[in-house]
Length: 243
Image (tube, rainbow, N blue to C red):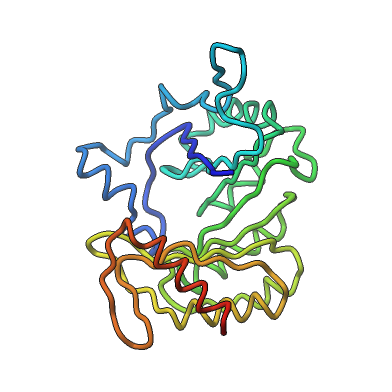
């Protein structure tokens, strides 16, 4: 079933090299929106709980809910709203919530009191752009009690060896993506292939979700329109499966 985006709050602060050309800041600038002001959404906060006239939930059972992708679920300014968001997540055990963060070091202090070893309907993904980010963040993910642990290498800025994390058997999926829009840094398909080979070695599912706007394939650079990045990544995945 196709997923949806749920952004209970909007706005963020750049915290590492991967944030330099963040798509949220880019799109907000075009709309004259101040990304640096983190604010609770007036219209979307209760999105998973909305019902139609028949009293049925508008977000159908089984839907994947990509949570807080225009902010960070564990950002400090959201501390006053997060418990309410957890209550919503707990109230919809039939939905699959995907929380992606660069602030995984704050996660253990931001979990609900009844979290125990994790809610069945929550996966937490840590975003890493380079080796330094992976070294600094991923051990927090391994130590966190959670039902599903994902690694998002996005925007991928170099080949990132993940063997020390994959060999634990605690990583459920790795997804790779390039950087988008005008100033996008390159994403080399060779890095993607090597990461997939590492995942295959440990039997960890792998996905290449977008090429980025500046894609290198067999030494040749290609400028790819943003709306084509996902389709081109699907084509590249077919090549990876053939290999």
